[in-house]
Image 1 (cartoon, rainbow, N blue to C red):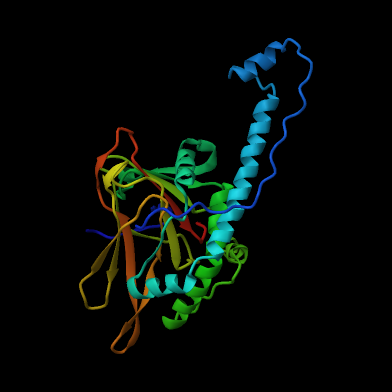
Image 2 (image 1 turned 30 degrees about the vertical axis):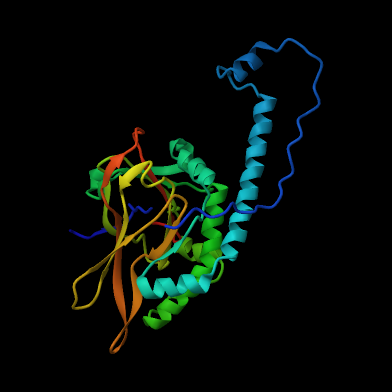
Length: 315
């Protein structure tokens, strides 16, 4: 198969779902005291039944505020959950196999809500149909800034411990770049070099769709690790569609890994290279990733959604 190195265009995507994550308490939204019954004005009636011309519905505003507060609470819970992960075990898995699975990074309800965002065009800066560029079959969309709170929390909280692993890898591979502990500082480096477009994305596949092997490189500054979270349930929503990794070892044939994921599981894997121990010391292994063909899908037109988390921005 021809390797595909995608510049502007990228894509991404075991164990039982984790126990519900404990999130900080969120103050309830108290409805305003009821007012004396009065006939509603015509423009308010139109706003409530969806045919309004811009009139404000107080109930809708209260619900929107409640949803926003719940999102903030969920984002805080993400940071707590990430901090509690066994990062030494994750590093060991990455060193040994080139990837690490974090079971149940998101709960089922979070996966469903996140996948539903794909239909909210205002959240995204661009849409890519893979077949138009020879990247596979299916499509994906890049989020725009500001990112949704949960996705921003995932990106920020994962970056710190991954930066520790990335710095060790670069030292082993004799690569000059080092990564600051705070994601904002790394993004400032990207933006100063003209890499200002956000790269988190959501992918959507239907029956027969697939994703060619590729690397997610977007400019001069590349963070060496990335993550993907499967938002759909294998065996229920779709069949096939396995996340796959290949590694090209010097003077050897490529090795393939099929990564088993359940809904809500996160896989962490290299963007480009990883270090490997050989008889003469450490050498670089080139990595690529993709998704195998969706062999069968549920009755829904789109059966497999995945969230991709890339930590460098794009030119």
